[in-house]
Amino acid sequence: MKLGGSLARRRRSRRDKSRGPIAEASNGRRGQRGYSRLWFSVLMLALVGWFGGYLITTQFIFPTPPPPGDLFEVPDIRGGGLATARERLMGAGLILGEIDSLLHPSVPEALIIGQSPLPGQVLRPESQVRVTVSLGPQLRSVPDVLGLTEDRAQVVLASSGFLVSKDTVEADLPRGNVLEVFPPPDTVIPLPAEILMIVSTGPALVAMPLVLGLDREEALILLDSLGLMVSEIEEVFRFGRDQGVVVEQEPASEMELERGTEVRLKVGMSGGVVE
Image 1 (cartoon, rainbow, N blue to C red):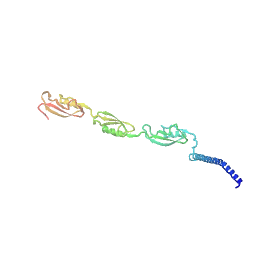
Image 2 (image 1 turned 180 degrees about the vertical axis):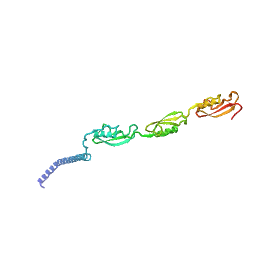
Image 3 (image 1 turned 90 degrees about the vertical axis):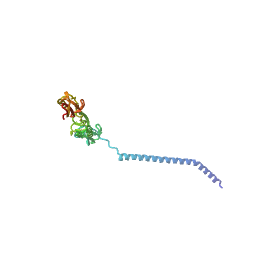
Image 4 (image 1 turned 45 degrees about the vertical axis):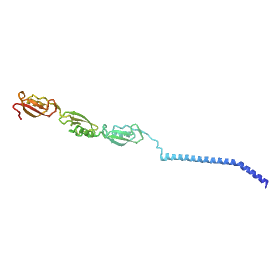
C-alpha cells in the first residue's frame, strides 16, 4: 500500500465533506429563485389577461356610448291640441311620438292630458315625446224609471253609472212610486252625473169630517169638497128632529183618509125604512 495515495484520498474526503453544506445551500437558493420567477410570470400573465379582457369588453362588446351632443328641454304641451304640441316639440328639437287616449270626466275631447317624459327633463335631438289625449267624458242616456218603485229605480240608475238624490211629493200615484226624474228620461249627459228622483208619498190625507146632524145635501157638499166619495146613503126610521139629517157615518170623524175614499151615510126618515 502506497503512503502517498492514502494521503491523497484523505485530503479529497476532507474537501468533499467541507463542500457538502455549501453546495446544499447553493441549491436551495437556486430553487427559491426559480419559484419566485414562476409566481412573477403567473402574476404578469394574469395582469395581461385582465387588461386584455377589459379592452375587449369596453371596446367591442360594450363600447362606451359617444358623448352626447346638445340636449333639449322637454316643453309642457299639456292642455293643448296635437297640432300645437307638434309645433312646440319641433321648435324644441324634438318630435311627437306615440299617442294614447282615454276617457276623462272634465277635460274636453282632443286635448292632451299627459306626456312622457314630463316637462323640464332633457333629451337628445329628435327624441320622441309620448302623449295621452282626452276622449272627453263618457256619455250616458238617462233610463226611463217613471212608475217604478223607489228601490227598483235606484238600482237601475246606479247600475247605469248615475248618482241618485231623492225628493218626495204628494200625488195620486201609490206611495213609493217614481213620479219624475231630472234630467228627463233619454237625455244624454256626461258621467259622473246626479239624477234627481221625485217619489210619490201617495195621495194627500184628509180628516173625515163630522157630518152627524147635517142635512143630507150639506153633508154631500162637504164630503165632495174634501175629495171623499159617498158610495151609499141608507134611510132609516127616526122620530122628531132626526128626520132628513145624517144620523150615522162610516168612517168615523177625525180618521185620516186618502182622497177618493168611499163614505157611507145613514139619513133619518119618517114612516119606516125606505130602500
